[in-house]
Image 1 (cartoon, rainbow, N blue to C red):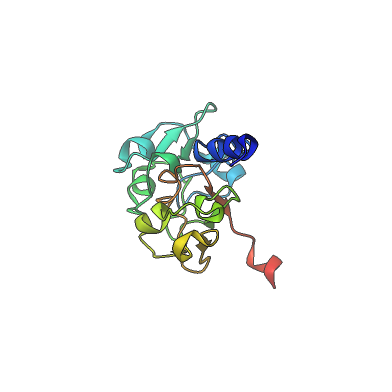
Image 2 (image 1 turned 120 degrees about the horizontal axis):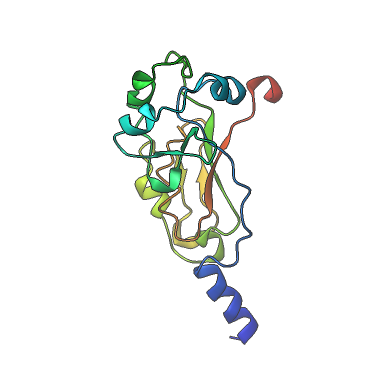
Amino acid sequence: MDSARSRSRRALLFGHAAPVPHVVVLRPPWARPDAEFSAACTRCDACVRACPPQVLVRDADGLPRFDARAGECTFCGDCAAACGSDAFLPTLDPPWTLSAHVADTCLSAHGVVCASCREVCPASAIRVPPAARGTAVIDADACTGCGACVGTCPVDALSLHHAPAMEAIA
């Protein structure tokens, strides 16, 4: 194996081959649209303290956000219940429009057997081709956007994004 190929594979395995992803701010489940949420949130941290899996953190602006690298959202509703303002809409179904996406740095796409994302997905929404014959595939209809897969990926190939609006798809 030539040294250039060896270096690129090494970089891939250690996560250095991926470009720095654009940071998408993810608000807690059932949060109002961002501008409304920002206006309604009192920044009291009640939702952050109430979160059993501790996946809500405070942003630099004092607003709570979901940190998928910290673990998965279990959709228990404790964050919305703890809120004393009207920043949350607990009747939203589904609680948000997040869905997982796989980057081209996925180990399986590069011939490395890995299924860490599939193994932790509580919705069984991830399929990984056998024998590392391709990128992991997300079933968008089954994905809840819980984030369980994000923190377990050894090369940060998974991220959460807001699904496109249904009107845009039609």
